Image (cartoon, rainbow, N blue to C red):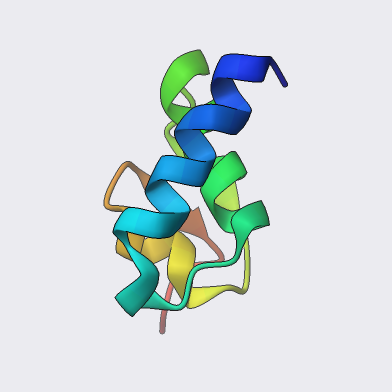
Length: 60
C-alpha cells in the first residue's frame, strides 16, 4: 500500500461515510482499482456496493 493509496482511501472513507464502509474496506477498494482486480472473495456486503467486479461467493 502506497501513501497515495492511503490518501485515496481516506477520501473514499470520508466521501462515502453514508455507506458504513470501514477504512479497511476503502483501502481494499482503492488497491483493487489500482491493480485492476475485478474479483473479490468476501462475505462483506460493502464489496458488492463498490460495483467494481464480482464478489465470491455469489448470492444464491
